[in-house]
Image (cartoon, rainbow, N blue to C red):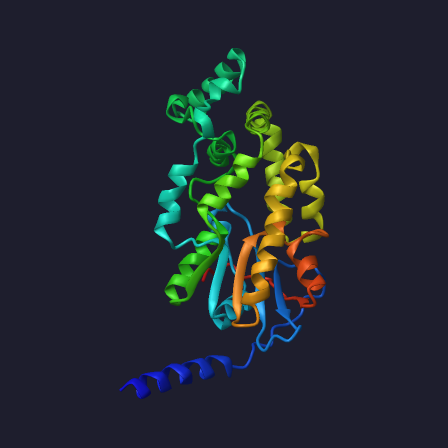
Length: 301
C-alpha cells in the first residue's frame, strides 16, 4: 500500500511538471500588469501580476491570459496569506499604536476636533472607538468617500475567490505581524499629518485617487512610480519601508521558491516598478521578465 501511495505521489508531481507551459502573447509595450518570469535555469515559468487594493467591484475584470497563467501555476502568492483566518483576526491585534499612544497625543486640540468632526459628520462614525488606532489604518475609512459606488472590493479579494474555487494553494510572503511592524516603523506623527491632510483636502485627494485608479486600469505602469513620487500622495517618507525593503525581501524568498514550482504572485502594482521594483530586481537576479498581453473583457472569472 505504501508503495502504491508513493507511486501515485511521484506520478502526480511528474504529471504537474510535464504540463506544457502556456504560450501567452507578448504585450506590444511594457505597459501591462501581467509578466512572465522564466530563464535563469527555471524549468517552468511563473507569473507576476500587479493589483489595486480597493476599487469598485464592478470595475474588476480579469483577462483570459491572466486566467490561463493562474490556472497553470501550482501556488498563488499574495503579500500575505489571504485565506488564513489568523491573519484577518490578527489584524485586529496590530491596528493599535504601541506604548499606549492615542490620537490625542498626535494632534493639537483644534486638529483633533477637526478630525473628530469629520468622522462624526462625514463618516457617521465615532472617533472614540479608534483612539488608539494607527493613523495610517484610519485612512482606510476614507476609501468609500473616494468611490462612486457602494459595492467595494479589492483585486486580491477577487483573485482569492478564483484560487479557492480552483482549489489552488494560497501562500503569502509576509505575516500580519510583519506588515504591522512596517507601519510601526513610520513615525506616528507623520502618519497623523498624512491623515489630517487627506481629510482637509478630500476633494483634491479624490481627484488624485481617480487619477491613480485610471493609471492602474489603463495599465500605464510607466506612470505609477512617477505618481508615487508626487508630494500630494505623501508616500516619499515611507517609500523605502513600504516598497523597497519589502521588494528585496520577497526576491530573497523567490530565489528558493521559483526553481521548485510555478507560482502566480499578485502584489500591489507599485511593487512592480522602478529601479528597486520587482521587475528590475528579478532581472538583476538573471530572470527573464516578459510582458504579457492583459486586455480584458467585461466578464468576470
